[in-house]
Amino acid sequence: DTEVTQTPKHLVMGMTNKKSLKCEQHMGHRAMYWYKQKAKKPPELMFVYSYEKLSINESVPSRFSPECPNSSLLNLHLHALQPEDSALYLCASSPLFGDIGYTFGSGTRLTVV
Amino acid sequence: GENVEQHPSTLSVQEGDSAVIKCTYSDSASNYFPWYKQELGKRPQLIIDIRSNVGEKKDQRIAVTLNKTAKHFSLHITETQPEDSAVYFCAANGNEKLTFGTGTRLTIIP
Image (cartoon, rainbow over all chains, first blue to last red; front, side, top):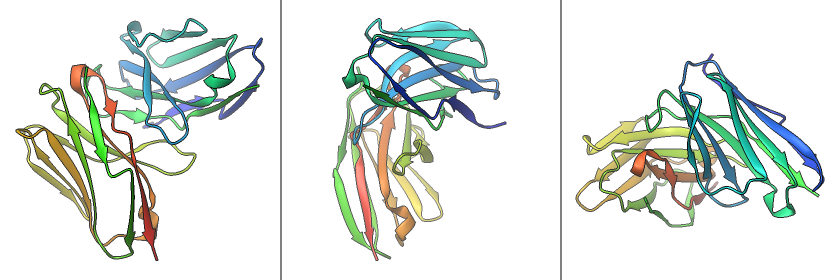
């Protein structure tokens, strides 16, 4: 398996909702990442997990809460989001943190209404 | 932290001609420079990458060159085809984080 799988592909949520994004990989990669991508912009790093521990939080608002339950799974819990949080959320993994060989998932298109 | 600049932001070329996209980076410790192609609504896909101990790398119609002294690297696409139309991002791994350039929208004119 050489893929990063993200679910759901699309998500519409209200500003008072709580939802979660899921990312899974079975390549044995020990680093996993969350990126946010707005239209016509490059991906922006949000969080990095290395060996299931949070290594980097790029000053992301607390309404985004990451979780790495095991080496294959990465979640992003969403609560009280704003319309400006609407974006494509991309998960990626690499063999080790800072290593080459990033693989991106197909993303979750999030719309906050 | 790392800062990656990318030019041009848009590029239109006739089918069959060559396209060149250029990037500069700021962190001299960066040693890995991938290029991604992103089609509308899809994930970024790695098309070619280069490490800092190599000056040039080629894969069929795609090549990347790296000038470590000047801190710039370029993507070259020859014999362009309509399916090359997409947004291309360069990136550098300064501070062990992958930082992306601002992207180039490449349009191939049939």
